[in-house]
Image (cartoon, rainbow, N blue to C red):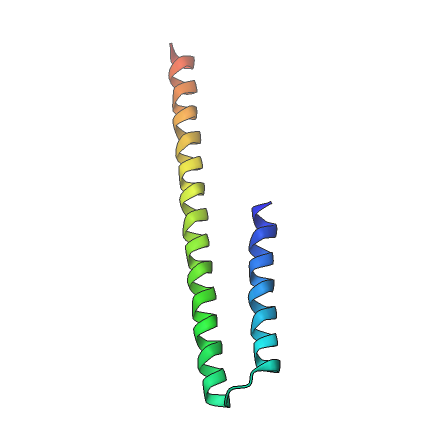
Length: 77
């Protein structure tokens, strides 16, 4: 489910950038600046999503490690 959201975000950013170029009434330099800002914003959002996913994976792995330690301790008893 989260993968679909990520791909929808990327597709939306790409579609917005393409439509922005096609229908932009601004000069080329202004359009390039706007596209650059949009790309930077998209990258920032992507980095944030990746950091969040990394933290969730780390938390999950820590939980698994703790559960495994508990099982080993109980088995030793």
